[in-house]
Length: 136
Image 1 (tube, one colour):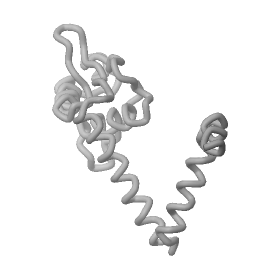
Image 2 (image 1 turned 90 degrees about the vertical axis):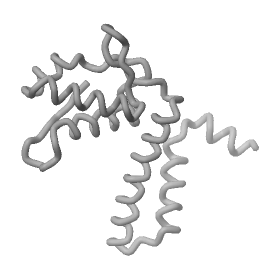
Image 3 (image 1 turned 45 degrees about the horizontal axis):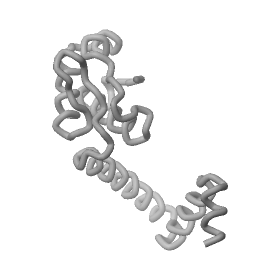
Image 4 (image 1 turned 180 degrees about the vertical axis):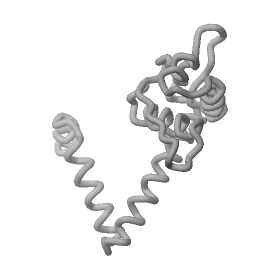
């Protein structure tokens, strides 16, 4: 798990960890059931207080992103958790907001943006899925 922190961006360190872990989970770079780096180890790697990492992990647990197993570590929660799903949708909504704002600044209509998204989605699908859609 690669976490990078910055003391210059004004975001509290524990929140930087929370946000990056959420992104790693949402992007499937951390899979359900995968163990997070132990608190002390991550604190040593980032050169921060272990309490900061512990706070970040508590926040992630409250959000349903991770779960603690007694004396066995902290693990990514099952992706079917309603809290984890809600968090994934929240992250996507934030990215959509940013995309819409950027499109408006560039005078790109929402309809055009939707067409681009559909084109990109089709291009990213495996060839098999596209063949099945055409035969339907």
